[in-house]
Amino acid sequence: MATVFNADFGSNRQWVAGRTSAYPRMGPTNRSDHKLDHLVPAYCPGGEFVATRLAGGDLWDCNLLTTEGSPDNFQLMPGDTLLARVTLPTGLGAWPAIWTWRDGGNEIDVFEYHPDNPDLLEVSNHVRGGYRYWHGGAAGIAPGATVNLRTVFGRRSVDWYANGVSVYSDRRGVGSAWHAHLIVNLSVSDGTYHPRPPATGPGRLSWTCHSLTVER
Image (cartoon, rainbow, N blue to C red; front, side):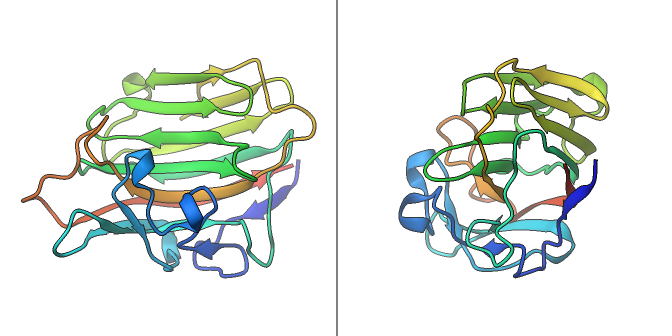
């Protein structure tokens, strides 16, 4: 396999910052998905994704990068393997994710994480159904931990790994015609399913994607 994508989170050729068709009318907010996000057109050199509390309301300025609409227009294809090294957030309400999107769907969640469930990774195949909420404390999943993620987008099975441990094989895959853009972001929970940040707590949340590559 050869590396076909090596993320530079400061690159405006690889990424579009602060807008995505996954949010209604391309953003900048997505309250219908239980998020307090207000997207900002800021890149993330070094891979640090940040959310900052806005004064006078409950929204947060949030980083989101997508390959959708970028000059390079990179898309994942069946058979690709995504490798990422991430440091999980510690602050309540932080909601980091790496996922895919195209034409109103084609979503595969490489991972989602909420610090209120400290050892839990969420992985999902919304293309053909299948998900797992995986308790990975024994594999090192915890707030502030650095985790190596590997996801194989197979035609017949999407397979997820964390720190070399198998998380889930959905045995459904993405099919032969699937393709989708990458999204990397930090959202903020609105309290519906996970606690929102405490009103008197810190006004800044973050997580870091140290590296992200795709092999084909």
